[in-house]
Length: 113
Length: 115
Image (tube, rainbow over all chains, first blue to last red; front, side):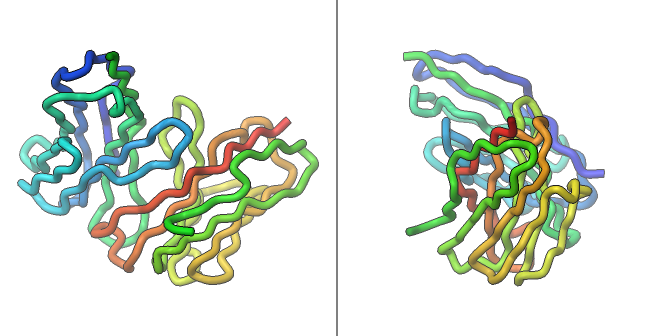
């Protein structure tokens, strides 16, 4: 079946540190991959996405590359800010039809000033 | 109003009450979703409607009853809930029938507490 595994948190970093949140997936075929972010008291919002192998999604300084050989979609940012403190979710949607998106458990990030 | 709105934002109800959660999307999308978000659990998909037809129903107890009267509105009717149903209920929408190509847009959620 389809599944998403992401690193457990919380992750605590100092401002301007480098961020990596690991995400690996299991899926039939080549799904679309997403990173969503949830700020306190809000719903999820799309951070970036990639729909085919070797695509790189990027937004607000965050990047992730769709790696089919390692079935991974790791999230990176070169210099985090306090405002990046949130919960980050990796997700996949199979291209085999249907509307079911599989979400990872979420990784909470704390950034200290 | 823009995006996806949900009302109420907070709800406290007893186990014998009946209440409804409302979701409205202003994005022209044709698929709408209900999710349950509990502490320390992955996001759980409950229901999906595409063009007002239910297309996913993930073994949700019958005390949760969805309704989608048109492509802009989605309701979740609640009755005789249990304390373990306390959670954040998120509504989302997306465009197109090719779900894999489109991201979902989420509302801010309704924080439900069952006493």
